[in-house]
Amino acid sequence: MHAVAAATQGRRTPLVGLSGGADSLALAVATAEAVRTRANPALAGGAGAVVVDHGLQADSAAVAERAAAIARRLGLDPVVIERVHVTATGDGPEAEARQARHAALEAAAQRLGSGAVLLAHTRDDQAEQVLLGLARGSGTRSLAGIPRRRGLILRPLLDLTRQETEAICRWAGVRWWQDPANADPAYLRSRLRTRVLPALEDPDEGLGPGLSAALARSADIAAEDADALEQWASREYSRLVRYRPGEHASGAGNRLGITAGRGANLSLPLEELAELPDAIRYRVIGTAAVSAGGERPSRERVLAVDRLIAGRAGGGTSAGPVQLPGGVVSRRRRTGGYATLDFDAGEVLESPADAPVPPAPSR
Image 1 (cartoon, rainbow, N blue to C red):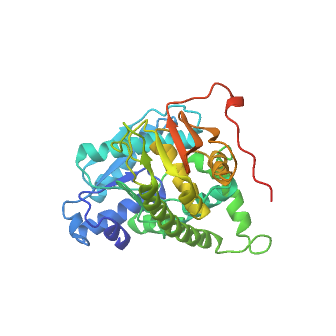
Image 2: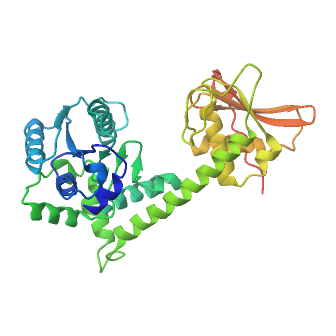
Image 3: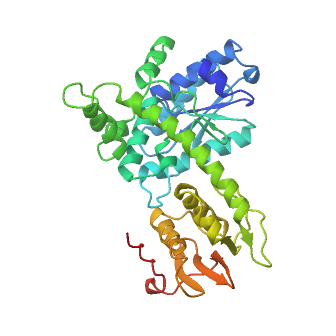
């Protein structure tokens, strides 16, 4: 209850994202209690719930209706059911369902005039997310796991375990639905939940109890570090970027909050860029690619661009090009005695042979 009250500070009429599972029902119970006890002035107008029916199982409509009925019995209002169609995008069933769910939740919040959507991710979910990031070889932002807040989305239960959410449901006398997908080994997250984490926490053959809590603490630390690095990189990008004649910064945003024109051609001074720490320079390169109208580049592409900077002492007036996703090309250029790293929009090289990856400097 206190976590809900703290998370919703200043957010009008929050909506609980409800599935009917133990975690989301526990969040519904805590939210209803926070409203009943007037734990936060922001909840004076009450709170509602949104049940998303993905239509992926034969009884999904009945499950959604039952979850909505429990939410109404708890006193949440309004309570709505959003039925969505999960579109295959090639990202996998879990990601596709998540995309459809989040779109439905945010649309419902806007339609109902809500200032927040509460989701019931727990500390166990956070531990799973960190392990997934480690397995993928991801960076600091990915290892930060599930954010506590992003836009309308708030997650007040990230410090609770699944055992605790089930205890809340028992206390409130509500029965939860067991999603069969949670135990289906066809899904990677299910294998993590039912096999990998229990094995890692085995006191005799694993790392011992407490691993999930340690992974969640690591996520908090990584999130703090990622926020600081991204703010630093944002300042450096704003200081260094120069738009070519006829181009200007306006309109589309990017991950670091920098605004830039879609399709803008831009330059970064090469010598000053080279002096930045690696972690900041890589983020500036990624931001430049997005600001020029492209997509967030992979680490392999960022390192390919960075090798253009490492080769700044070489002869010639230009080096590259390096093709980046979304039709952006990066080159090193020299005009007189001034060298820049340029990002040109709307250019797709004809063949992979035209997009060389500069060799790594010898050590």
